[in-house]
Image 1 (cartoon, rainbow, N blue to C red):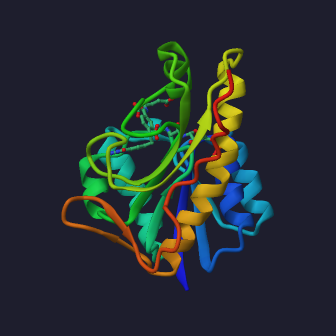
Image 2: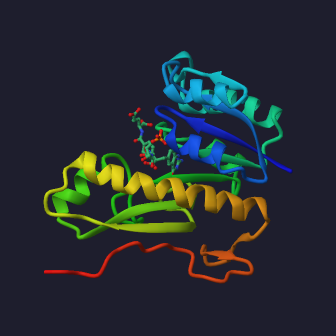
Length: 213
Ligand code: NHR
Ligand code: GAR
């Protein structure tokens, strides 16, 4: 069975969805850059080894990343999974884990890369929003896309309501994407698009209801 290591910074609901999906993968460790992250306690309750590394204890991004990599490689990780991890990773780290580093971002990439995607989606008045699982490259939030899910945006939505609707979809597509990885079904094509072997249905889920006026 393959090993994954999950990196978190906060609440850990995506990590929890992964832990509870009964995937054919071993979650070998969880690493947080915040000692107070609620995710750590959830991981311990699932019997997973946890580590906290504060980026403040390191001189620069790369030395922090190298300290994380020692833990990750010590657990023989086949894949590093970002689940609400809020530190930009150095080019060294991204190269070290090339094609073995995956993230979920709460927008329909390439729209709304970076921070506060829900607030910006509302400000733009988009009618459809969503989330994306992608491999990480050095271009922030721009790596090969594995899966996406869309949700409607309603006129009375605030940031919290929209984020909650998207989060529900995150909890579906991240475990699904990791199952494909576990089953060795993902390949990254030369043009950077992700191919899913033995695919029966489209890779995205579109729970958008018909438009009504
Ligand atoms: N690292 C690389 N190299 N490439 C990506 O695509 C990455 C990444 C690290 C994290 C997640 C990402 C997201 O999905 C992610 C993608 C943090 C920031 C950020 O600006 C941006 C994007 C993402 C995560 N972080 C600030 C920083 O200086 C700190 C913000 C904070 O601590 O609250 O690192 O959204
Ligand atoms: C999720 O919505 C995730 O997509 C987003 O933060 C939330 C974390 O929630 N990630 C990013 O914005 C990455 N920069 P969680 O800790 O409950 O999984």
